[in-house]
Length: 254
Image (tube, one colour):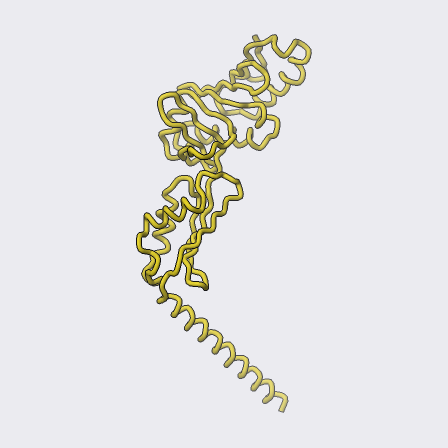
């Protein structure tokens, strides 16, 4: 008798589960054939980079997909919309889906700039956290380290900084500077010659820092910290005009 009761209960549960699954399948089928009521923009901008806002994203979606409102969801190519949005270099990731109200939800995440390329005879550009080169905005300036010089012009023409010889090491160095509170406040600009050799322009002290190539940047910055902490306080903060860190184990100040 106990076995029969257990069997009946399991049978009832199975019937209930089948009913729920059928309802879900029916609902999804209805939604697939339903029309898009409106477009809802969900801008994930936790870095607070205001190059694009919800209105910009909405206009971009409408421009790339005219007549999307009222279109049947089963005829909307979600992946195509995402790919078109991600073509904009300010956009790191785009996801699209329909909600229960019949709206097309467009969720966008923006890239984070870590350096700004400044040029005399060409537009400026930003280097994003993942190395992608993206344009500047008239409405917003990001407070990041400046990159100048002939080498910087080569970077501006690339798709990613990693595409330029030595670019990966440069990006690592920029991220190291950004993540360190002292260096992020102290290093205002990095001028890079055509051969890749760098000169650092500090924010506070007046010395030009001849840094050399980006390789070994952590050791070179360690030597520069010794120069700031042990040499300048004793010899005077304005005594030296130039400091050279290119040579292993040496700090040359003039």
